[in-house]
Length: 433
Image 1 (cartoon, rainbow, N blue to C red):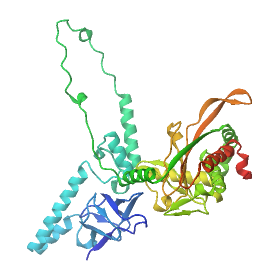
Image 2: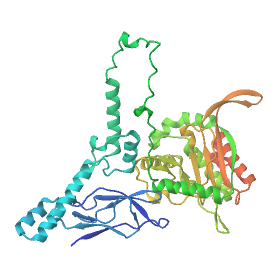
Image 3: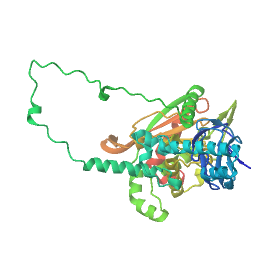
Image 4: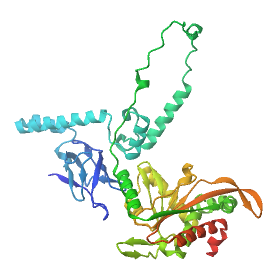
């Protein structure tokens, strides 16, 4: 008797998913809760575990197939009804029946196909590992996997790259060219023919978009087409925040076990500004404006699969240390590809920090159905006029993109000025003035 492997219940906003890769092939022994397959939704990669112990049977839906919640994608057989081919084949010899021999041959073929796949160039890889392998042109078969069942982990690929770099650094330099070879050719010598080898090649590579990348593209186009989007700019003197951070960062880390960054200051300043300008925290639903009585701020994070926006819930109730700790956890989960749907669902406002990549100025795009997004940028020392004197200050440009259908220019500008004032006088964050 076989057990069906089904696609788990998907989040309410997700209608289907794509099978990314199978970790087990027909004939493989399987333990309960062992990961059988990765499936990708518009937002996250989900792992489907084995419902019970057994032997991998028929795979109904291959990698790349579009599947829906509750759909049967494979079957598990009872462990006593075969293993990796040997037990089944032995039973065939003992019975001597033609049907049993045929079954054994089919299982042998499946096992051979699996072994060939294991030795090929396309083993089951996680999204993060696949990105590294493709980016550096590596052969996964040459890398030793330390994960469960020999599965290749991201750490294995990074270690392998470090080994390659070390070997390249220790390689002896090429011998010097002989003086005769350095002599210029005679004037009558014909010019060398143009290179037609690999150096003259113009390679191209075509790969399908991941579901996440396709969804990002869809939402960004949707935001520009369906919202009356404008961007207002300002600049903030970061010296007060930098001085406060330098004064207390060691004690903060010792007390709370997490580093004090800039993002917590921006989250708390944005939360206070959202309280004062509720339309920036609102959204449009048909012909209605929905004013949210809570503050869930999304923090844009660059992950191996693309941009993701995990949500800080109820930021008005969080301390600075809680903000920093949660953002730090989000970064680790994004890098490992383990963000869940609960981490990414909802949000009433978003903060994006392009400054970590060196961006000096940009116009961020609204994350629908939200009505505004704050863009942070690189801190750069610039000459500024203060009290009739030219002084050097660490300045950051701020950008607020907003939906003009719900937010007027006055509110947008005042919202951004409120954030600027809070950051230039951090005591106001504590006093809420």
